[in-house]
Image 1 (cartoon, rainbow, N blue to C red):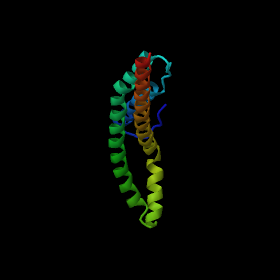
Image 2: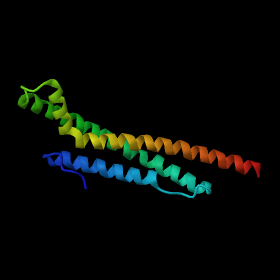
Image 3: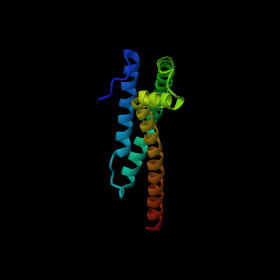
Image 4: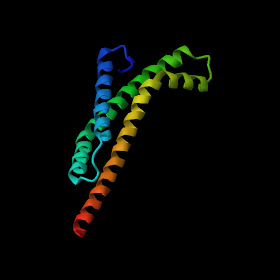
Length: 135
């Protein structure tokens, strides 16, 4: 379940959609395979590549939401916390946007992980190809 961050239902629905896309993307990355079967390796590679657009689109949506949210919170922090130091205001702002920042960071890490998986799968396919030639 996605934490309720926005009062605006459209923004909250966009957040929930982006998180759902990330979950689907993560599932394709975490899918286990038989690494001895080249067809299984190819299927996983295709799955990751085909779902990677979901991860990238989700990250873009989350970045857009975060930028707007930060702008709103900056105004609030500056208006309500004038007597505090800049370091205090920065800490307050970071606490205000922490949940949404978590989703953005998670999306970024999933995208990086997908790149690592793609490279590992490509290496595994190359090894299968070398083994097939030597037979």
